[in-house]
Image (cartoon, rainbow, N blue to C red; front, side, top):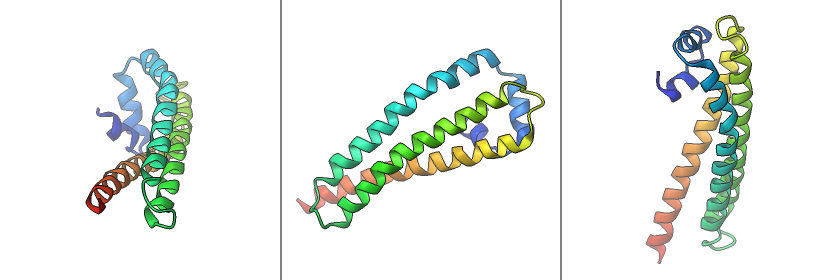
Length: 134
């Protein structure tokens, strides 16, 4: 099962079936190590948004939106961290966890992905806009 599909399944039964065929201990270690990746991409989005936004005039919508996108990077990483807390909780009883945990896990994953893709989209459009204005 693909990672994004499992994160956005909103189904405890789907995750339980996934965990039956997954090396749980390896998956637990990977989720723990993921916190380093969260810090990396959160910092990258934050920094990139600030660098790009500062290329625009102080009163421009691009600069103001860049500050919002910078915060989205940090918020996405925080949502990812909460998502991973739920994943680690699910792994304590991979076949008997409450299904509501899977739904909450997927909600945080959805918010994370929306923020990440929105940030990337903003950066691409902002860079193109900046190049066209030169």
